[in-house]
Length: 325
Length: 256
Image (cartoon, rainbow over all chains, first blue to last red; front, side, top):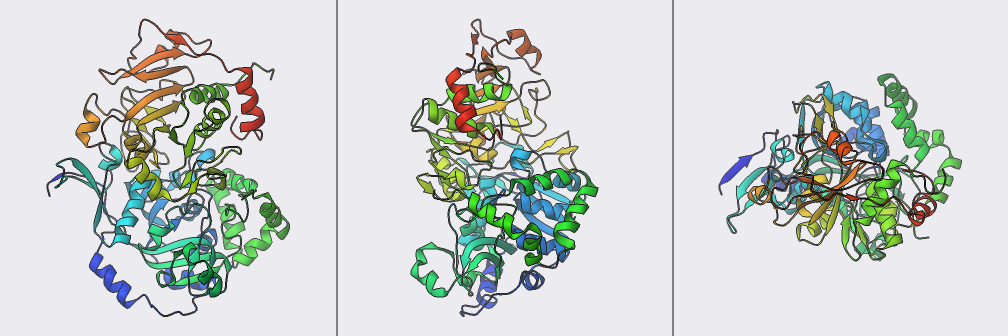
């Protein structure tokens, strides 16, 4: 196949499909074992300095905030990150944990650009920044999920987004047309927050599935946090709702309101006031530090975070969710 | 604010909404496109199918989404799938319109939302990045770009082509391997409505906003704009548009 053009961005996590197969053979048990553990234990066991890590979903929606805060609390450094996130990734930039970045979009949506991202990237503290589109990075997960080294797509062509990626343009061997090849992206660790899971890790989400399906299949280690831990019989009653089967999962963390200040569809609404607090405080380095102390470093775990937010407020967010009304 | 006074954001939303025909699919991003789609649904396109990149399809935009993944993006919708399904739907040619924005636009409708300055890394200013923008600009049939209009934003060359417009001119998209017959369709700016000349693929003035002169548009554009002999005038928001926008589309005044 003739390579016409190569993106000049670093291939931060080169795919090794055979190693991935061996990993899945050796390291991922098919046994139904209880994987429920605390956020502290899950992060300490499966997230490590220098690992390549990704989160799902996006913006303020179904973000694995409990796990993300724990990564900050344990100061896991030199992270290489699949950057398709907003609220959660901001905290890692704020805590200066990110070394390399495959970026699609990191910003505060309606509230504008991310000051935490800007400080880390413009200072050069993030050493490598490689560009992709949202479709692009998700298709990279899909390639890994398919067990193939790359996936051909018709996006990113002709742009600087391509030029500063590590994709390649080739002549299609079937049509002769130019096509963009995206390298498979296999994560060392993935973090996903779901509506419900059983103790083995069978996990179900409500509403849009974002890229949970693709990313969960592209991880060497997968930590799932769940609003609710349910009996396996509940899962077996509706197996069609299971988006992540247990054998993909390494840890199950019970995290009610685990997306706060983001939302969880049909459970609770997003917390505008808390989101605005981050938008405001993250404008300065000092404010950022105050925020991290208040909501992460000074707290031992997720329960203390929930206590700080307060039951009354959480109930209010639950009442605010419009869901199926 | 009396009934027929309006702010620039309200005008942008109304003009963007008027570009939408009925019974089409439209890829909607955060902000003004959400309001425009919602207003269009209430005014003249009850069967407009909004599509949101993380999986929401066909929502009734009775309540305004504040993010492209949130529950209102599939509130009473017809489907809630995921990002691959949506982007692949666009790749198969099912998405008619896509809304885009950016920090910079050039005469060919190329858009920058990645960095400001000559160097990619470390950059002078880091912006959020492509997000779904590049996919929308590559794969939807028509894109409608919504921009504030000044010489800092309408530039001869964007610092970074995040999302392809017509690239370097006629035939360039196809030569790059992008699907044929796609590309920027309209630019809705704070000063005017613009489109792209069929021959040269360069930006052309269509009509100016109320109270704006052709000279003002030219002065605020950092490149040579095609100005036809006949330039139209955009109608100001109607009382009905403003009522719907303020009372039904965004009663919490989240955006307007």
